[in-house]
Length: 420
Ligand SMILES: *[C@@H]1O[C@H](CO)[C@@H](O)[C@H](O)[C@H]1NC(C)=O
Ligand SMILES: *[C@@H]1O[C@H](CO)[C@@H](O)[C@H](O)[C@H]1NC(C)=O
Ligand SMILES: *[C@@H]1O[C@H](CO)[C@@H](O)[C@H](O)[C@H]1NC(C)=O
Ligand SMILES: *[C@@H]1O[C@H](CO)[C@@H](O)[C@H](O)[C@H]1NC(C)=O
Ligand SMILES: *[C@@H]1O[C@H](CO)[C@@H](O)[C@H](O)[C@H]1NC(C)=O
Ligand SMILES: *[C@@H]1O[C@H](CO)[C@@H](O)[C@H](O)[C@H]1NC(C)=O
Image (cartoon, rainbow, N blue to C red; front, side, top):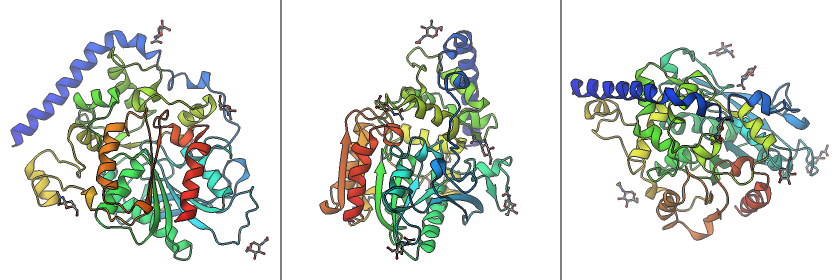
């Protein structure tokens, strides 16, 4: 068993070394075409708006903002921001509003909900639309890097995957919002990874008492048919595993490790790194340059390498399971069974109101995988409580920063809230 493990690990390393050697020769050229990262300073003008939510107790554009901290059961001290009411639409601070929790996706934080103008960004639109808006920031992101006993410099700080986001971060945020709004059930909005964790929790019959309805933007659960060549290649060459082996624990998408990863991957002639957004997540139809710039400058955040390994496992295998420790013995230690436990999405209760929206161009929440999810979810779901919105031109990022998302997606979403 140990020998097997060592051999597997050596394989990652050899893989890694060969690839870096082979690709290094011609990536110097391709590298210059990775527009989104290196030369961002030259291409993007500095922003007029302070994008960190709640700088000096105000969000951008003068919206009111509160900063809260929430400690998870496993010791992570997380930042939860709130825009309690809007500035247009006749809001006032004392009237009772329905709470909404926005849960961001992988490698970003809550700033991603506020990158456009007040008319374009979901965070502002909901506040102006009469909701009490809360913004989750998961462990490892800029404002959520404290812990009761660990520092982000400790490898142990990064010993988590989305299993822990579902088991600790999500319930801590929901409980906090519930408690601070007089025990009101919360409308939940998740994007991408933010959808996977609530599906995982629901599949274990958890959190249902705190959630009034759930909106899933680009739901991801099944990933085995993903159209992202970049994600596929990274998975095939065991890239995340290689970096883990080399001692990396934190993955910062705009940090030096990423440079190495991109140097490796963008050498592949199959993969066009000119537009990194498209290479990873599909060709977005409806992004403005200013919002894309703001995204790369302000929204990108770290995640754990272990989390990326877990995602790779989902691309390699069908089904939605907990993190696989790689052999039966280690899995026995953690789960008391040789294979990681399954999140059985068929057992999600059929009465939870859900609004699910996905795009035809999305490489991550791709159409075949989403159809699979829909077959699992919709089959038995009460039809009154399930709404599906398909947007043919949209890819992954359009749902959060697309300039026409307010009409195409947010309007029907708010109408859905009004009915539930
Ligand atoms: C990459 O950049 C080089 C040099 O600027 C250019 O000649 C080439 O056409 C670019 N390739 C792509 C795919 O944009
Ligand atoms: C705010 O709304 C509440 C309830 O509608 C009302 O009682 C209160 O007078 C309003 N306050 C202000 C300052 O308008
Ligand atoms: C992280 O937060 C600090 C202040 O807390 C800020 O100075 C820094 O620019 C932030 N970094 C990013 C990448 O947002
Ligand atoms: C981190 O949390 C500890 C409590 O566990 C607190 O004493 C400390 O001030 C916090 N650090 C920061 C930078 O907020
Ligand atoms: C974004 O792009 C669309 C379409 O080109 C345009 O109508 C809109 O005014 C732009 N918004 C901003 C804030 O630049
Ligand atoms: C998943 O849940 C459904 C509905 O409760 C059940 O019929 C099915 O047997 C479960 N599947 C597994 C693999 O446990």
